[in-house]
Length: 238
Image 1 (tube, helix red, strand yellow):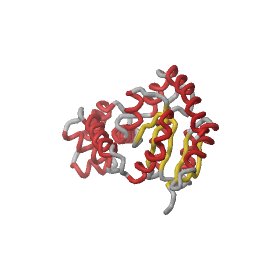
Image 2 (cartoon, one colour; image 1 turned 30 degrees about the vertical axis):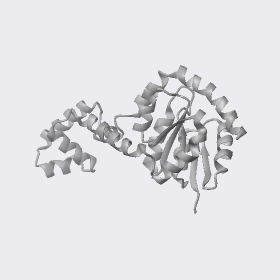
Image 3 (tube, rainbow, N blue to C red; image 1 turned 180 degrees about the vertical axis):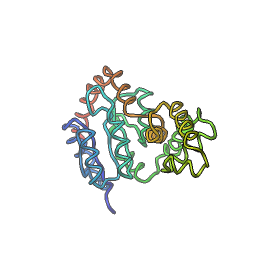
Image 4 (tube, rainbow, N blue to C red; image 1 turned 60 degrees about the vertical axis):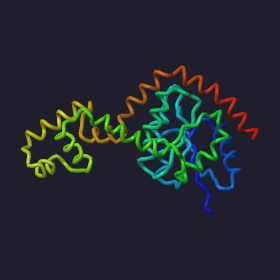
């Protein structure tokens, strides 16, 4: 049986080393790569074959850029993302699942990672059904302000139709369609059709909002680092 290929995304080299040794003890797992930043993770995702990514939620001190890195990884590859953190903030956990993570594991609970990885890989994670419904509800929440006609317009934009193509399909004049698009963009609080599709697809979670949320939690991120040290020492002793 081929091992489950794991990618570790973590800015702490000691954590990478300890976690790699810990997971490689499992007969059915193999750490195939590691990245220390969001940018490096995205580059690896374009070339490296992996099944599950373990993503540190704070790749930069004071920022929750691991959340956005997860979205970018999932844009590039069909894989499962498990978020790692020492933060138990409900809003942060919600953002992680909105970004597409299938599980959120505290670093102090690292012993559960092998089984969590297996569950994610085999799609036997009981959270997955809930997460699908969560994604549906987040999408509905984003589209709720739109009228029926605007939803129809959005659906065509989401399918990749250009505005001229939509105008011909719906038999609408250019000026009428442009006005309708502008109203839709205003309701969704975005500046372009492309951004509207991206925002709804991501449950309303956009890079700018993620980074603002992170800066609001700089103190929490600092506590996260302190908690990680004790957990890392425990991993090394395994």
